[in-house]
Image (cartoon, rainbow, N blue to C red; front, side, top):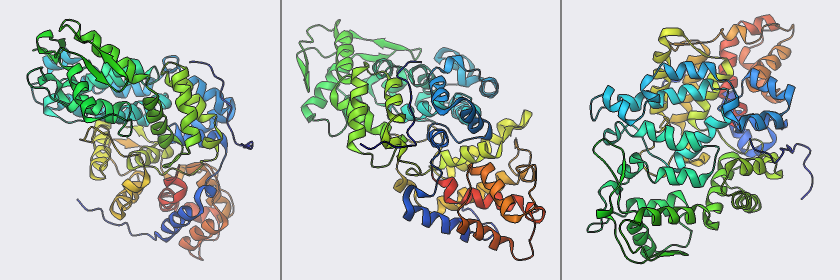
Length: 504
């Protein structure tokens, strides 16, 4: 493979219907069509910018500036050790939703059974972390794993279980070992109840968890398993249930005994008392199975490289996964250090959640005091309309991660409307300095002003043709940078509507 000048070297060390706004959208639509045709040529291939586009919920001037100072490699290395990174604003936002950090017993003591208050607080607080956390790689990986091992919200049957699941299983292990995360998930009451394992018993075996464990969580639908394997997988997991307080309990009386075999795993499974240990050995086998390695490697490559990633990259990531005992850090380092990652600039499209968070982050939006929860609730309402609220996918497979799943005129229009609302500071509870402060030192010429505004929002210059499109929008009477500056909010919204922002 030829050397790529933009390759990043990362050391192998731990660590209702929307209404169109009254503005000309031909620039944004034209740029989007051209970007689709031109592939990766539209976006800047600066390595650090490419990295933060993929491994954050949207670049900010501060984040881009930091990677320019310390280097993309060092930033990424630091991000893999999130415990060492102070996160005061995100922590403050998180504490504003007290139920989000509570465990199952605490939620049960504070709320009524079947209410979803804790879950609403949890996914709203999660959005807050995505917006303002300095630990962006952690937040991106929390989102990734939360979809692979999906337990959705709101769900009244999981009223006191779902939030703790995402804290204790996903967030705790997001940058650790998948093997540990899988073990934790298969003992957590939220997963057991969501996929009905809490009612599975030897006399009436429920196959939901046993099937999804194979199809969605480990080896994948093409992993070579049979329906007999699914049945045996469900047998192995019997006995894993929930007590009256909503905590995990292993009940030997529910466990199926007798020889079991799934793929290359077999066990006599002779005693009910030993059934939990059999299940743990089975999970360890699945976590380290080559098909699981390929399944997870491909999921990561789709998330961070391209909707159809090259097999060569998937194979190398799978090897890194197995060589490092399912640790995710080495796999991510192999991914961002690859030629395939470096060559995939602009090959991914921001989904609605990512477009929303990136808009707020690019504008420098901050939580506005006591009304912050109102602002986050407003964003959550938008995300619900476009079908991409945190933890909102109700099926066990998680949100789709390819552009084709999100291509619709309605979704695009809603995103454009949100761009205008945020640019105009029209969402109560969230504030930024104002569109007229995006460019603090107004250049003399119109083109210079447009370049400065695009650099502030998308961290690169527009092509001459696209800059000319913005000039045409301004009209012939705008001849100076100061005059262009008077249209800052409309210009900013158009740039955010464009493919420069939609792609990542």
